[in-house]
Image (cartoon, rainbow, N blue to C red):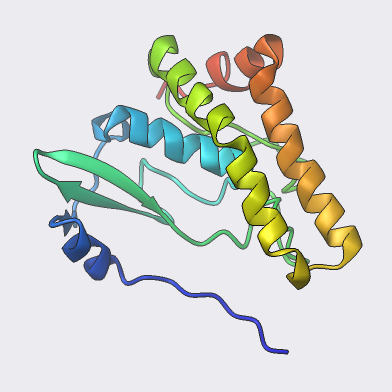
Length: 174
């Protein structure tokens, strides 16, 4: 059985949202705040550090009206969730393995970060349903690993101390 993946052309995404893909780099704090935090949480959830909003590595910026800059992430093969045999941790993050989560988002107000936290917690069942809907693509061992790995993310969100250690105290300042 051949299994592949699809990727939507970024210009088609821009057309769908009546926007355009920015060709110039923005400072990460110029990205729409809640959308940027949502993106950064997603990257943390899947334990992906192979991206940079500073140099637009594995991220594009969609500009939609009125002057909203939205990050579009792609290329997740180096993430801990995928856990590809060839995946290696970034030398910049201090990870021992790609499964060690590192929050790479920039510091934002704690109110906004907690707002996104709540949105993720509200979507926990939906995220787990997506995993269950694709269970036939995985062995029992792989499926258990994926469920556990994603479950650890939600455990962090539910625990105030773990959450602050991961997202508030370790956000990027520059």
